[in-house]
Amino acid sequence: MGKTKQNQTAGNQTTSEALTVWGTGRQGVQDMLSKMGAEIRSVATPKVGHDFDTWTKRAFLEITNRDELKSVVATREGVFSLYKCLVKAATMGVQIGGQFPQAYFMPAEGKAVLVISAGGLGFVAAHGPGAVLRYAPELVRVYEKDLLVIDQAAGEVRKHQFNPFVDRGKLVGWYMRQMYLDGHVEIPSVTVAKVKSIIDAYSRTTTAKGDMMPAWKKSPEEMADKTAAKHLLGRPARLAEGLAMAMSAEDGDDYEQPAPDMRDVTERTADRLEHAAEGLGEGTVAETKVEPEPAAVEPAGAAQPAGAAPPDKELF
Image 1 (cartoon, rainbow, N blue to C red):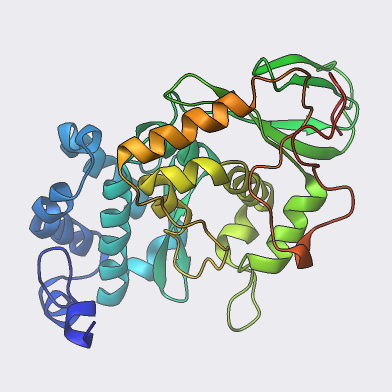
Image 2: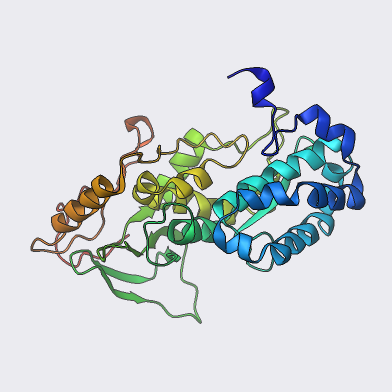
C-alpha cells in the first residue's frame, strides 16, 4: 500500500490536509468533531450511531477535562491522533470515559492512545462486530484465601466464597464465565504468574526513553486486569473480528493477538458446536487452557489441558 493511501483518513483526507484545517485546544477538538463527525459516524456500530450525539459529547468531555491530555490537544498532530482513536472506538462500539469507561485516552509521546478497559473488551465480545457471546462476561479476581470450585462440564461456578471483612490474601488469578451465542459455556482461568509472563514477553510498559507508559503508570492493576482479560478472551477473539480489533487497537501494544476467523458464518458456527460437544463428556474440568502461549513464556504450574484435572478441583 502506498504512502498516500496509508495517510488517508476515513474521509479520504490526508494527514497534512487535516492539520491545515484543524486548530488546537478545546476549540480544535470541537472543530474536529464538527468537521469529521459524519465520517466517524459512518464507521460506527449501530449502538453508537443511534446515540451518536451523546457518544461524542462524552468523548469531548473525556478529552477536554483530562489534565493528562493537555499536551495532546495543544498540537494539531495530537488532535489528529484523537480523531484516529475516535474512529477506532466507534468502529468497535465502545463508550468513552465515565466512571467505569469501556475505553479512554492516554498520552504517549505527544499523541493520544486509545486504551480499551477489561470491561470494554468483554462488551465488544458481546456487542461489537461479529459478536460471539450472549452477554459481556465479567472478569473476576481470585485471592489466595478464596474458596473457588468450577464445574466446566456444567458451565458453572459451584463456589466462590470469601469473607469480605478480612484480608483475602494476595491476588492469585482471574476467571471469566463466557456464554456463547449457541448456548455453550466456557469458564477459562489464568494465574498471576501467567499474566506476568505475558506482560514481560509482549506488553510495552515503557516508552522509547525508558519512562513508564502513562497507562501503566496510572493504573498497573487495571492494566494487569486487561492483560488477563485478553488472555481469557483468546478463543472468542478468533471468532469475532470486532474483539480481535479491540485487542490490537492500542498504538504500540506489542501483545501477540489472535487473527480474526475469516471463515463464513456456517463454518464458524459448526466449529463452536463441535467445541461445545467436546465439553459434554463425563467429569469436571477445573481449568481449561483456551489458547496456548509460546513455550518460552509458559510459567511453572500453568493451566493443564482440558481433561487433566479431577472433578471439582479447587483452583489456585
